[in-house]
Image (cartoon, rainbow, N blue to C red):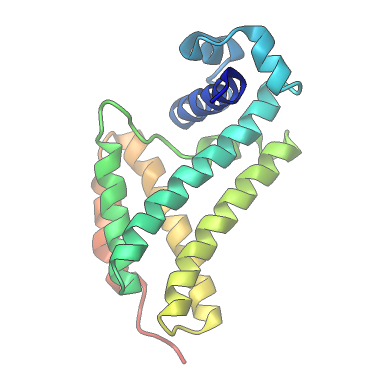
Length: 192
């Protein structure tokens, strides 16, 4: 591979990791440059819009990480309720990783920038929509009605995002584990 794609990718991966841990406002371009070891000129070469343009790409990158995380469990566990439950348990495990903590995938950026940056708001919206559709699709494939699958997609996304926030603020994965335990009661029988 040439240096240019690696440089751009390194900037995106570094920004993605830092934004997950500190949010948009908690990360400066100098933080990204220092951690990545990339010169400032390269950043503006790839991202002439600066931090906002880099953030949009970092959100897309984070979205793909989460998609892979969801797919891994959903491909292995057929029952949709059990798959969601397993997904949340695995997320709780990942949040305990001291070397590469998960942080808040895009929730922090979404809450900080939804009213001040339309490109960032749109990127966050698209990520949330794709995740929600993956959750809904798992239930649709299992024979749930379109309406119920869509509703479950929204519920799952909301409880996971809320569980991550609670887990981060109380410095414990207990909220996510409680949510995982309650999933079978929350996602009730199929409605025809």
